Length: 140
Ligand code: UDP
Ligand code: MG
Image 1 (tube, rainbow, N blue to C red):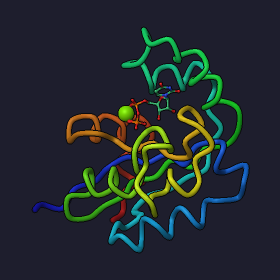
Image 2: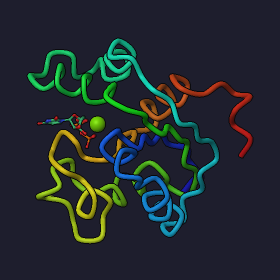
Image 3: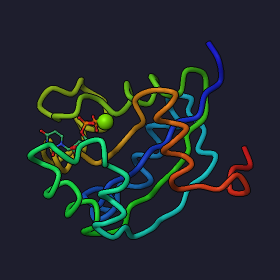
Image 4: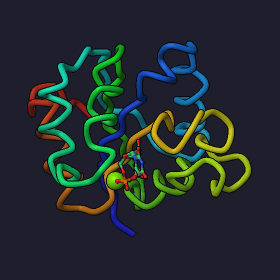
């Protein structure tokens, strides 16, 4: 399998509870390398642009409000099959369905406030990385 990069976000529910280090340890223990990382505060408008694919969903307003409610840590994870591996480490969207040991099983508070975002495919990973990082910020 090829080396890939994927976009990860540690969401406001997790930064608020001081879980950045514990979540990063899960990535590193799974063989994912954090090759770029920054802590930022999104506006609701920026969160809406990032989650534009969900604009018609009933939870869109709540989701963008939540993503703008506190700091997030945006990061690029690199590794063999990083996109799928990260989704595995994250666990299912709804923490009630997330496998034991996954980030969402251990830390998520609800289906909305579920601690992490991860890209779901190579094309979205590329777009989402470019949404937050310039080439100069990706040093490997
Ligand atoms: N979400 C929500 N309610 C739902 C489904 C999703 O609030 O019924 C939120 C949740 O924060 C989720 C995000 O919208 O992580 C994006 O949804 P997606 O289906 O892409 O899930 P993910 O890829 O994050 O597992
Ligand atoms: Mg998704």
